[in-house]
Amino acid sequence: MLHSNRRYRNYAVLAMLLVVLVWTSVGQANELTMRYLNLQIMDAVDLGYAGDAILISTPQGKHILVDSGTPEAGTQVLTRLQELGINHLDYVFATHPHQDHIGGLRTILAEIPVGQFYQIDLSYDSSHYRAVQGLLATHGIPNTTIEEGVILEIEEGVVLEFFNPPAGTSLGTDHGLTVGGVNDHSMVFRLTYKDFSALITGDIYRAREEELVKRFGERLQSRVYDAPHHGQDSSSSQMFISHVKPEISVFSIQFLASFSTYQALRDLGSEVYVTGLNGEVLISTDGYDITVDVEQAIDSPFLR
Image (cartoon, rainbow, N blue to C red; front, side, top):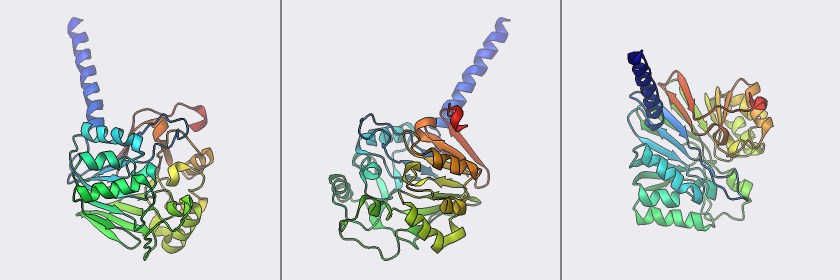
Protein backbone atom coordinates (compact mmCIF):
# COMPACT_ATOMS: atom_id res chain seq x y z
CA MET A 1 0.00 0.00 0.00
CA LEU A 2 2.87 2.36 0.81
CA HIS A 3 4.47 1.66 -2.59
CA SER A 4 1.18 2.40 -4.33
CA ASN A 5 0.82 5.78 -2.59
CA ARG A 6 4.38 6.73 -3.48
CA ARG A 7 3.76 5.82 -7.11
CA TYR A 8 0.60 7.95 -7.06
CA ARG A 9 2.57 10.88 -5.66
CA ASN A 10 5.17 10.43 -8.39
CA TYR A 11 2.44 10.54 -11.06
CA ALA A 12 1.05 13.72 -9.47
CA VAL A 13 4.47 15.36 -9.55
CA LEU A 14 4.91 14.38 -13.20
CA ALA A 15 1.50 15.83 -14.04
CA MET A 16 2.42 19.10 -12.35
CA LEU A 17 5.71 19.22 -14.25
CA LEU A 18 3.87 18.73 -17.53
CA VAL A 19 1.60 21.68 -16.72
CA VAL A 20 4.63 23.85 -15.94
CA LEU A 21 6.29 22.80 -19.21
CA VAL A 22 3.22 23.83 -21.21
CA TRP A 23 3.30 27.32 -19.73
CA THR A 24 7.07 27.85 -19.82
CA SER A 25 7.81 26.35 -23.25
CA VAL A 26 7.77 28.74 -26.20
CA GLY A 27 7.13 25.97 -28.69
CA GLN A 28 8.24 22.60 -29.98
CA ALA A 29 10.07 21.81 -33.23
CA ASN A 30 7.85 22.31 -36.29
CA GLU A 31 5.32 24.10 -34.09
CA LEU A 32 4.15 27.71 -34.17
CA THR A 33 2.69 29.31 -31.07
CA MET A 34 0.69 32.47 -30.40
CA ARG A 35 0.60 33.55 -26.79
CA TYR A 36 -1.92 36.22 -25.75
CA LEU A 37 -0.49 37.65 -22.54
CA ASN A 38 -2.84 38.31 -19.65
CA LEU A 39 -2.17 41.95 -18.79
CA GLN A 40 -3.70 43.46 -15.67
CA ILE A 41 -3.73 47.01 -14.35
CA MET A 42 -5.66 48.28 -11.35
CA ASP A 43 -6.19 51.92 -12.37
CA ALA A 44 -9.83 52.69 -11.64
CA VAL A 45 -10.17 54.88 -14.74
CA ASP A 46 -8.53 52.51 -17.19
CA LEU A 47 -9.67 49.22 -15.67
CA GLY A 48 -9.93 46.72 -18.49
CA TYR A 49 -7.59 48.54 -20.83
CA ALA A 50 -4.20 47.11 -20.03
CA GLY A 51 -3.90 46.66 -23.77
CA ASP A 52 -2.65 44.00 -26.16
CA ALA A 53 0.52 41.92 -26.21
CA ILE A 54 0.87 38.88 -28.45
CA LEU A 55 4.01 36.76 -28.56
CA ILE A 56 4.44 34.63 -31.68
CA SER A 57 7.17 31.98 -31.71
CA THR A 58 8.03 30.25 -34.98
CA PRO A 59 9.06 26.65 -35.66
CA GLN A 60 12.67 27.77 -36.16
CA GLY A 61 12.72 29.64 -32.86
CA LYS A 62 12.17 33.23 -33.93
CA HIS A 63 10.20 35.46 -31.57
CA ILE A 64 7.77 38.17 -32.67
CA LEU A 65 6.09 40.60 -30.29
CA VAL A 66 2.93 42.35 -31.49
CA ASP A 67 2.16 45.34 -29.26
CA SER A 68 3.10 45.63 -25.60
CA GLY A 69 0.20 46.89 -23.49
CA THR A 70 0.13 50.09 -21.46
CA PRO A 71 3.20 51.62 -19.78
CA GLU A 72 1.97 50.10 -16.49
CA ALA A 73 1.81 46.65 -18.11
CA GLY A 74 5.29 46.83 -19.62
CA THR A 75 6.96 45.17 -16.64
CA GLN A 76 4.42 42.33 -16.86
CA VAL A 77 5.36 41.72 -20.49
CA LEU A 78 9.07 41.88 -19.72
CA THR A 79 8.71 39.48 -16.78
CA ARG A 80 6.77 36.98 -18.92
CA LEU A 81 9.39 37.10 -21.67
CA GLN A 82 12.10 36.44 -19.09
CA GLU A 83 10.11 33.54 -17.61
CA LEU A 84 9.93 32.04 -21.08
CA GLY A 85 13.69 32.40 -21.50
CA ILE A 86 13.40 34.96 -24.28
CA ASN A 87 16.34 37.36 -24.24
CA HIS A 88 16.03 38.59 -27.85
CA LEU A 89 13.09 39.56 -30.03
CA ASP A 90 13.60 39.08 -33.76
CA TYR A 91 10.68 41.35 -34.67
CA VAL A 92 8.46 43.84 -32.87
CA PHE A 93 5.29 45.21 -34.47
CA ALA A 94 3.48 48.26 -33.09
CA THR A 95 0.03 48.07 -34.70
CA HIS A 96 -0.65 51.76 -33.96
CA PRO A 97 0.71 54.39 -31.56
CA HIS A 98 -1.94 54.46 -28.82
CA GLN A 99 -0.50 54.01 -25.34
CA ASP A 100 -2.31 50.71 -24.64
CA HIS A 101 -0.42 49.19 -27.57
CA ILE A 102 3.02 50.84 -27.44
CA GLY A 103 3.29 51.97 -23.80
CA GLY A 104 4.97 48.79 -22.63
CA LEU A 105 7.72 49.21 -25.21
CA ARG A 106 9.23 51.88 -22.97
CA THR A 107 10.26 49.02 -20.67
CA ILE A 108 10.86 46.28 -23.24
CA LEU A 109 13.05 48.17 -25.73
CA ALA A 110 15.29 49.32 -22.88
CA GLU A 111 15.89 45.75 -21.66
CA ILE A 112 15.66 43.31 -24.59
CA PRO A 113 17.57 43.50 -27.90
CA VAL A 114 15.32 43.74 -30.96
CA GLY A 115 16.31 42.75 -34.49
CA GLN A 116 13.71 44.73 -36.44
CA PHE A 117 10.94 47.14 -35.49
CA TYR A 118 7.87 47.84 -37.63
CA GLN A 119 5.28 50.59 -37.18
CA ILE A 120 2.79 52.54 -39.26
CA ASP A 121 3.85 55.77 -40.97
CA LEU A 122 2.21 58.09 -38.47
CA SER A 123 4.07 60.47 -36.18
CA TYR A 124 1.90 60.69 -33.09
CA ASP A 125 1.82 63.53 -30.59
CA SER A 126 2.30 61.70 -27.28
CA SER A 127 5.06 61.26 -24.72
CA HIS A 128 4.86 57.47 -25.14
CA TYR A 129 5.35 57.67 -28.90
CA ARG A 130 8.31 60.05 -28.52
CA ALA A 131 9.87 57.81 -25.86
CA VAL A 132 9.62 54.76 -28.14
CA GLN A 133 11.22 56.64 -31.05
CA GLY A 134 14.00 57.74 -28.74
CA LEU A 135 14.68 54.18 -27.61
CA LEU A 136 14.79 52.97 -31.21
CA ALA A 137 17.44 55.57 -31.98
CA THR A 138 19.41 55.05 -28.75
CA HIS A 139 19.66 51.29 -29.21
CA GLY A 140 20.15 51.41 -32.99
CA ILE A 141 17.10 49.25 -33.69
CA PRO A 142 16.25 49.10 -37.40
CA ASN A 143 12.87 50.75 -37.90
CA THR A 144 10.61 50.32 -40.94
CA THR A 145 7.07 51.46 -41.70
CA ILE A 146 4.36 49.07 -42.90
CA GLU A 147 1.35 49.47 -45.18
CA GLU A 148 -1.07 47.45 -47.31
CA GLY A 149 0.63 45.19 -49.85
CA VAL A 150 3.73 44.36 -47.81
CA ILE A 151 4.49 40.65 -47.52
CA LEU A 152 7.12 39.49 -45.03
CA GLU A 153 8.49 35.94 -45.01
CA ILE A 154 9.67 35.54 -41.43
CA GLU A 155 11.17 32.18 -42.26
CA GLU A 156 10.41 29.47 -44.76
CA GLY A 157 6.66 28.81 -44.62
CA VAL A 158 5.81 31.58 -42.11
CA VAL A 159 4.41 34.60 -43.94
CA LEU A 160 2.78 37.88 -42.90
CA GLU A 161 0.54 39.63 -45.47
CA PHE A 162 -0.52 43.20 -44.66
CA PHE A 163 -3.96 44.63 -45.53
CA ASN A 164 -3.85 47.91 -43.58
CA PRO A 165 -3.07 50.83 -43.34
CA PRO A 166 -3.96 51.72 -46.95
CA ALA A 167 -1.09 51.86 -49.43
CA GLY A 168 0.37 55.34 -49.72
CA THR A 169 -0.58 56.37 -46.19
CA SER A 170 2.11 58.73 -44.95
CA LEU A 171 1.17 61.09 -42.16
CA GLY A 172 3.95 63.32 -40.92
CA THR A 173 1.80 64.08 -37.89
CA ASP A 174 -1.54 62.80 -36.63
CA HIS A 175 -3.13 65.75 -38.55
CA GLY A 176 -5.83 66.11 -35.93
CA LEU A 177 -7.05 62.54 -36.43
CA THR A 178 -9.64 61.41 -33.91
CA VAL A 179 -8.93 58.43 -31.68
CA GLY A 180 -11.00 56.36 -34.10
CA GLY A 181 -9.05 57.75 -37.05
CA VAL A 182 -5.78 56.55 -35.54
CA ASN A 183 -7.36 53.17 -34.72
CA ASP A 184 -8.46 52.77 -38.33
CA HIS A 185 -4.83 53.11 -39.44
CA SER A 186 -3.86 50.06 -37.35
CA MET A 187 -1.82 47.32 -38.95
CA VAL A 188 -4.01 44.47 -40.11
CA PHE A 189 -2.15 41.38 -41.25
CA ARG A 190 -2.69 37.69 -41.86
CA LEU A 191 -0.16 35.20 -40.50
CA THR A 192 0.04 31.90 -42.37
CA TYR A 193 1.94 28.70 -41.64
CA LYS A 194 0.98 25.72 -43.81
CA ASP A 195 -2.79 25.32 -43.30
CA PHE A 196 -2.84 27.62 -40.26
CA SER A 197 -3.86 31.27 -40.45
CA ALA A 198 -4.46 34.10 -37.99
CA LEU A 199 -5.77 37.61 -38.60
CA ILE A 200 -4.25 40.35 -36.42
CA THR A 201 -6.37 43.49 -36.43
CA GLY A 202 -5.20 46.18 -34.01
CA ASP A 203 -8.08 48.51 -33.15
CA ILE A 204 -9.87 49.00 -36.48
CA TYR A 205 -13.53 50.03 -36.41
CA ARG A 206 -16.48 48.76 -38.42
CA ALA A 207 -16.13 51.28 -41.26
CA ARG A 208 -12.55 50.13 -41.95
CA GLU A 209 -13.66 46.50 -41.63
CA GLU A 210 -16.19 47.15 -44.41
CA GLU A 211 -13.48 48.64 -46.62
CA LEU A 212 -11.24 45.63 -46.02
CA VAL A 213 -14.05 43.24 -46.94
CA LYS A 214 -14.62 45.15 -50.19
CA ARG A 215 -10.92 45.09 -51.05
CA PHE A 216 -9.89 41.63 -49.89
CA GLY A 217 -13.04 39.55 -49.44
CA GLU A 218 -12.25 35.87 -48.85
CA ARG A 219 -8.54 36.61 -48.41
CA LEU A 220 -9.45 37.69 -44.88
CA GLN A 221 -10.60 34.20 -43.93
CA SER A 222 -8.51 32.97 -41.01
CA ARG A 223 -8.70 30.18 -38.48
CA VAL A 224 -7.71 32.46 -35.58
CA TYR A 225 -9.22 35.92 -35.12
CA ASP A 226 -7.64 38.62 -33.01
CA ALA A 227 -10.84 40.56 -32.27
CA PRO A 228 -10.33 44.27 -33.10
CA HIS A 229 -10.43 46.91 -30.38
CA HIS A 230 -10.28 44.35 -27.57
CA GLY A 231 -13.56 42.69 -28.61
CA GLN A 232 -15.62 45.85 -28.17
CA ASP A 233 -18.76 46.44 -30.22
CA SER A 234 -17.11 49.29 -32.13
CA SER A 235 -15.73 46.47 -34.26
CA SER A 236 -16.32 42.86 -35.37
CA SER A 237 -19.28 43.67 -37.61
CA GLN A 238 -21.33 40.75 -38.84
CA MET A 239 -20.04 41.37 -42.37
CA PHE A 240 -16.44 41.22 -41.22
CA ILE A 241 -16.59 38.15 -39.00
CA SER A 242 -18.65 36.33 -41.65
CA HIS A 243 -15.74 36.77 -44.04
CA VAL A 244 -13.08 35.84 -41.49
CA LYS A 245 -15.02 32.72 -40.36
CA PRO A 246 -12.74 32.02 -37.40
CA GLU A 247 -12.52 28.74 -35.54
CA ILE A 248 -10.94 30.56 -32.57
CA SER A 249 -11.34 34.18 -31.44
CA VAL A 250 -9.44 36.04 -28.72
CA PHE A 251 -10.35 39.26 -26.89
CA SER A 252 -7.38 40.99 -25.22
CA ILE A 253 -9.13 42.79 -22.37
CA GLN A 254 -9.53 42.46 -18.61
CA PHE A 255 -13.28 41.98 -18.76
CA LEU A 256 -15.87 41.15 -21.41
CA ALA A 257 -16.75 44.54 -22.91
CA SER A 258 -19.35 43.31 -25.41
CA PHE A 259 -21.55 40.29 -24.87
CA SER A 260 -23.11 40.85 -28.31
CA THR A 261 -19.71 40.52 -30.03
CA TYR A 262 -18.92 37.44 -27.95
CA GLN A 263 -22.25 35.86 -28.87
CA ALA A 264 -22.02 36.77 -32.56
CA LEU A 265 -18.73 34.90 -32.82
CA ARG A 266 -20.10 31.96 -30.84
CA ASP A 267 -23.07 31.86 -33.23
CA LEU A 268 -20.60 31.49 -36.11
CA GLY A 269 -19.18 28.42 -34.38
CA SER A 270 -16.03 30.12 -33.08
CA GLU A 271 -14.49 29.29 -29.73
CA VAL A 272 -14.05 32.61 -27.90
CA TYR A 273 -11.43 33.37 -25.25
CA VAL A 274 -11.03 36.51 -23.12
CA THR A 275 -7.64 37.13 -21.49
CA GLY A 276 -9.18 38.77 -18.42
CA LEU A 277 -11.38 35.72 -17.84
CA ASN A 278 -9.25 32.87 -19.21
CA GLY A 279 -5.84 34.26 -18.30
CA GLU A 280 -3.03 33.73 -20.77
CA VAL A 281 -4.22 32.10 -23.98
CA LEU A 282 -1.71 29.81 -25.73
CA ILE A 283 -2.46 28.72 -29.29
CA SER A 284 -0.20 25.99 -30.71
CA THR A 285 -0.18 24.50 -34.20
CA ASP A 286 1.84 22.18 -36.37
CA GLY A 287 0.38 24.03 -39.32
CA TYR A 288 -2.69 21.80 -39.43
CA ASP A 289 -4.13 20.96 -36.02
CA ILE A 290 -4.66 23.69 -33.43
CA THR A 291 -4.48 23.33 -29.65
CA VAL A 292 -5.63 26.02 -27.22
CA ASP A 293 -4.45 26.07 -23.60
CA VAL A 294 -5.74 28.56 -21.04
CA GLU A 295 -4.98 29.18 -17.39
CA GLN A 296 -8.64 28.79 -16.44
CA ALA A 297 -12.02 28.11 -18.00
CA ILE A 298 -14.63 30.87 -18.06
CA ASP A 299 -16.79 30.16 -15.03
CA SER A 300 -20.06 31.78 -16.01
CA PRO A 301 -23.33 30.11 -17.04
CA PHE A 302 -24.02 33.08 -19.34
CA LEU A 303 -20.84 32.55 -21.40
CA ARG A 304 -20.94 28.79 -21.92
